[in-house]
Amino acid sequence: MSPSRSRRSLTAFASVAALATLATLGFQSSAVSHGFHAVAAPPASPTSADQIQNIDQVRTAIKAYYGDTLTTTADPVPNSVDGKDNALHVASPTGAYAREMARLEKSADGYLKRGHEHGSKHGTGSKAILLDVDDTSLNTYNYEIYSNFTYNPSTNGSFVDAAAFPAVFGMPDLVASAQKAGYTVFFLTGRPESQRAGTETNLRNTGFPVTGTPVGANPDNVFLKDVNHAWTTCDTTGDNACSTIEVKSETRKYIESLGYDIKANFGDQLSDLSGGYADKTFKLPNPMYYLP
Image 1 (tube, rainbow, N blue to C red):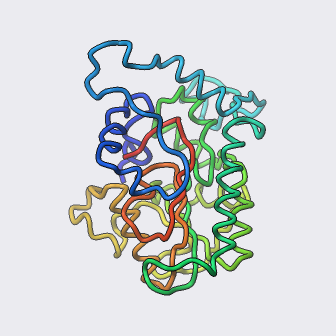
Image 2 (cartoon, helix red, strand yellow):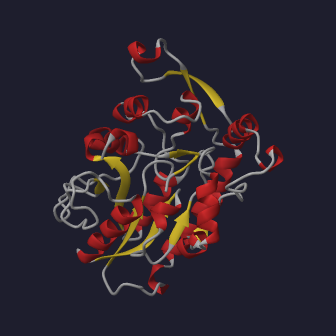
């Protein structure tokens, strides 16, 4: 996957038209079983400035929602790139974001503990859960503030390689509870294979289970976006033409072909959740950016 497409193609502020289109098509309601939906977008072709929320006000609101907290930790980007050490900002464990996550996790935990009541939509199999990585397992608020909500593949890659992201509040505990209840845990991210080491280190360091045990042709329970996987059929050119929805849905299909039944799929983007092969989906809150 090319670096410029490795994580996002639209920022939160440039993606409103796409969100409006998805809502018109009913994409949200069909993809999300439980969780948080995007605020209604302004018109795709505004005729007045009054129809568009001020970007600076949006940034301020996002910081307040996450409970912006300044730390003494320096950013991991080399000074040769950004010129200096910048103190990182993180989300507050007592902020609105953390509280919303706690409510969602309580609901998800109850659902998973009632696993014996679930009817499978895809046949029988060993019960499993699947999680996206960015802003589902690992919180990238520190990078968004560092970058002023403007994605740069080079600086973002420094954060990934340094395993610099904290866990999303409560998610390691939810995953541990699922494991205790007998669920196998998988991770599926749009990050490229070149970022596997940083991704797996970050997951391990924040309390998530990375098995290191072969699962089919994959080296462990972490699946990254790589069109060379045998189970992806959406691209034959080698140019990473596969969309996120195609790669993620085909990978979920592959996991289920190994004898698993994905009881719950967790993601912060609609593209994490669309395409089937999960009995229930949970949409996590993320007002920072949008990925088609």
